[in-house]
Structure formats: C-alpha cells, structure tokens
Image (cartoon, rainbow, N blue to C red):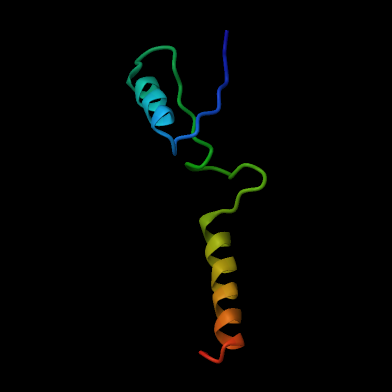
Length: 67
C-alpha cells in the first residue's frame, strides 16, 4: 500500500516528520516537487520568478523616479 501525505516543512513538526522519513532506508521515498523537474501547477520556476520580480522592481523604480 502506498500513502501520500503533505508535510509543511516550515513547522517544527514538519521538520521532525521529514527527518524521520529521510532516515528510513527501506520503504520510504521523500519526493519534493520543488526540487528538479517541472514545478507543480501554480508555482513558478526560479527564472520566471526572477523575471517577474525584475519587471516589478523596474516599474516601481520608474514610478518613483529612481531609474
């Protein structure tokens, strides 16, 4: 039987669960969708995030006369 769970790694309990899962040698696979491959729907790649932030930064600077 395979069970899929979602763990919030920003919490102490989440950290403990992930640490325990990573220590298991057999029968446990930890899959992080943020590492490698395609990001899940609704997420951006680092390149997309950089591009979006750069545009936003430039627009804000122009608005206030910094650039």
